[in-house]
Structure formats: structure tokens, C-alpha cells
Length: 150
Image (cartoon, rainbow, N blue to C red; front, side):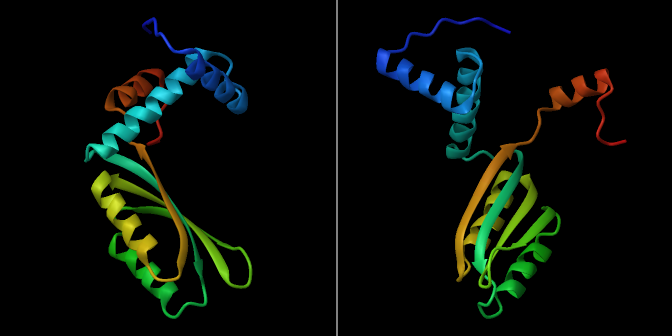
């Protein structure tokens, strides 16, 4: 770890302290690390990141809409190489929530999500993109015996 010195104006420091309390951070370093990671992730996405990622696509749709469930299922079958898992929840008589886990290149994951969210009768949709783990971290896991492939 490296230690740095950062100068923040009083208003920004007060806002950081409010975030710390609201989210339960133990100290400013933890908060700043998480905020920095989030900002760097967003910056990479804005710059057109093309690396590997895991995407969490959540959306609510009207299950009674004509052929919608069939179109959504077809979309995921057409991109079966990206689809890891899906969860389907009946919210009420008209609305269903689905959460799909996608894994692949950022543009491909974004493409599937955009296609699903743009479907008529999909009322709400959101994609959270999580960068794939760094290979160096995977190598460190191998040294400590933490292996998900077993």
C-alpha cells in the first residue's frame, strides 16, 4: 500500500464524512478507496472499455405484453455464451422482475442489456458492470489456495 496526501476543500470533506456515516465506512481511507474504484470504473466505461466484465442486468416488465417473454428468452438464447444465470420473480399480477448475470466483453454485455431494456413493455432496466478480476489477483489466489475451479 502507498500513503498519499490529498487536499480537499471543507465542503467536499463534509460531504465525504456524510457518505462515510451513511454507508458505514470505518475511516476515510476505506471510503476514498471505494470512491476511487467507482470513479475509475466509470471513467473506463466512458472511454469505451472493451475488457472482460460481469454484468448484472435487472429489469421489470409486463408479463402480459404480447410475445414479450418469448422475445426476452430468445435474446438470452441468442447470446447464450454471455448468459450465466437468471432469476425470475413475480412482483404482482402484471409485473415480473428478472435479474440476469452476464459475463463477457463489455461491448457484448452492454449490447444485450441495451436490447433487453429497449423492448416494448420493459418498464425499468439497469445494467451494473463489474470489471472482471485482474489476472494478477487470480495468480495470488492460486498461491494462497483459493481456487474456484475445483
